[in-house]
Amino acid sequence: MESSEEQKLQVRKLDLSDKSKGFIELLQQLTVCDSVSDKDFEDRFRELNARAEDHRVLVIEDDRSGKIVATGSVFIERKFIRNCGKVGHIEDVVVDANARGMQLGKKIINALTDYAHSLGCYKVILDCNVENKAFYEKCGYKQKEIQMVKYFI
Image (cartoon, rainbow, N blue to C red; front, side, top):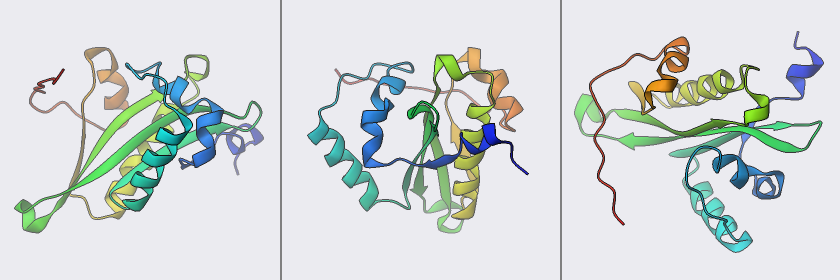
């Protein structure tokens, strides 16, 4: 049975109302994320919702404060290899600085991983910085090869 604390911190899909609950400010703790207008947020939310199976954004809301305290997303890549297999890509995982140490990151990662597995993905991959490697290893991930990136200005 879950404790009342756990019941207040459940993983769920992103909702349109989450912008007013600090969702964008939470992403700003992860990376560059300029302010997003209500219209732009709604447009992107509806765009992602139209691709609901292939792109899932999950959040944890603290029911006591009404704030989003953790988030992450997974998108599904459909491939020709591996018998037209699918790969899950986990992105944008962040836990609010004031909520760290409560296993919320692990909760989000497990939910994203389980979702990709439920869709038949043969693997789930993610990129992380060296400082977060141990965390992802505790979640069952292991280092494989290297990441390359090219940014467009």
